[in-house]
Length: 300
Length: 225
Ligand SMILES: Nc1ncnc2c1ncn2[C@@H]1O[C@H](COP(=O)(O)OP(=O)(O)OP(=O)(O)O)[C@@H](O)[C@H]1O
Ligand SMILES: [Mg+2]
Image (tube, rainbow over all chains, first blue to last red; front, top):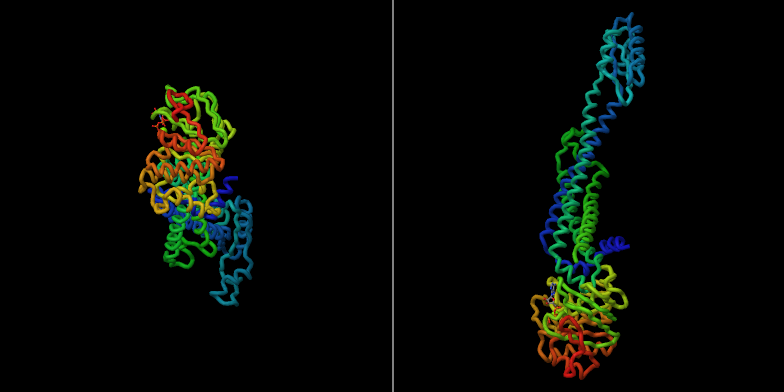
């Protein structure tokens, strides 16, 4: 099939056949410049997607951890209130499981401060109840109200819950990053299509001569396709390279990854920008091919 | 090679050619003459499927010209060497590359053709101009380059539209000699020309039929030719 021929010709690079289309032209420079700029932007969109993805993962891991209920009550009531709290929790939708920490576990938690020999039974140490929530989460305000009514000594400490909207925001940001990438890709395709059409139109005389000497449309199209694919590839390689360097040079102050300084690639993620020029080349290949065959069909 | 039956052609409502019948047998040598504007170039364009007849039937190498798609037209043209009257070239290529262009587009460039190419360029007297660009050529040099380009593919059929219009008599004879030589090797040749002296010179070398196109019709030329 001629598509296979096109791809082989592209890879083999028949320099001779490339000659038949004049080298110069606005459309050519435009393609290199715009592919470069688009690739530069694409690197940032990619970095944004990957970074917000990491952020969302990290924060939702934290969310999956338990929240705790601190129960302070006179020793006589402690046991009864513990049962009340556990019963309430059992009835609360969104709570996966709940259990009171044993004395040993509580001692282990306090050990760093008070040493190993703490007589925990004699001290008014609050009882800790660990709450594991389902992925949907529970209604914290509702739970708080019930606890206040039924076990006044219980305090719900859901320190990780404030992150939930942030995780949603990070997820949304990741989505926006991919959307930006698709828009960049679509704009590149549109630009290459226009540039290819302009090149074909300004080379009408060349096309006529080529046809007179027996060139098939696939040959003529191929010459243009190779040109534009190479230009998009080189422009995008340059743009993606510069974008990657710019990302690498971002200061990374906080090791734990405050959001902005976390905007970068990690590990094998550094290979991602290399996909951008390839994507640009594939886009240019198809955009030019479709534009060329359509234009050639219209030229009598 | 070419078979025209009752062919009519008009660019607008007015027909340029009508009821035209022509057969170019393999190995034949024809001249086509007639007043300027009679339709000689138009007739040649019908022969290489640049134009489709508005009436009648044109067959090229046994195929109905009207039914050829783009790809078939291209392949057909690879078998026909045409010297166009206006000699269009690709101005960004050298003369040498332009002459090799039919080989390039047919994917046959570089297949041991370099020596042939050099020899052919020397033969048409363009050895010194091979690396020039077409806009730098004189009218006669362009025609010689066009002839070289037309025959580089070793075509079965050669259609030449005023191939000697801009060259001196000596060069005209040389080009004619090249064409008669090719005819002797079995190629079919059709030359459109105003140059009656050239026709007379040719008749001494080959068996040539002279056709006269006037008023949209073809007739055999008078005995003086
Ligand atoms: N593209 C065109 N559109 C409209 N009319 C055309 C076109 N090409 C040629 N003609 C007209 O058709 C007629 C025949 O033109 P053609 O070029 O075939 O003549 P010719 O015999 O080759 O003339 P010459 O000897 O001057 O080259 C002329 O009257 C010309 O004006
Ligand atoms: Mg003419």
